[in-house]
Amino acid sequence: MSIACGSLYARNIHREFINRSPTDRTEARIAKGVALLIKICALGFVIFVPTEYAVYLQLLGGIWIIQTLPAVMFGVFSSWFNGWALLIGWAAGNVAGTLMAVQAHLTPIYSLHIGPYTVPGYTAFYTLLLNLALATALTPVCNALLAKRTERAGAPRS
Image 1: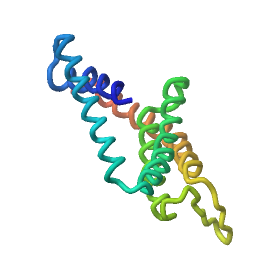
Image 2: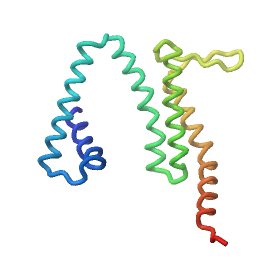
Image 3: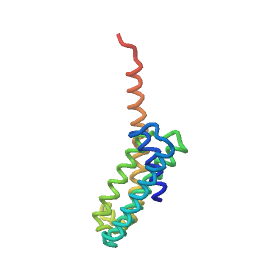
Image 4: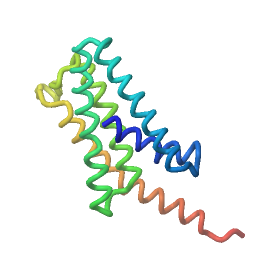
């Protein structure tokens, strides 16, 4: 994974923002350096961070990564969803998931209170539903705002 991260950094960040035309040798050297840095950070994490924090990070990682599912699936395979709505749903799902996990003392189960009922469930599932609901509800709104913006930008000036 560190090799992949190094290559991604060298090609997508360093090439785009720091050096637009690196040689193949320079790009390989940067990728190797970043991969080594990631390995050192991972070793430091294993040695110095308590094991329970790694478990908490795994839980949060599961909540965060599932939020990419609607944006990727609907962004690639559907033309109905608006990109901004998918982004807002993704962000809201990540924020809500993190807050719900912290409120539940970093356990995977969150008790949702609906009226007099308490419904325990997996935090990532609840936040995925929130993500989907926001993306679906905001798509028409974002499309309407984008249409108005395009209409104003394309209107002839008098």
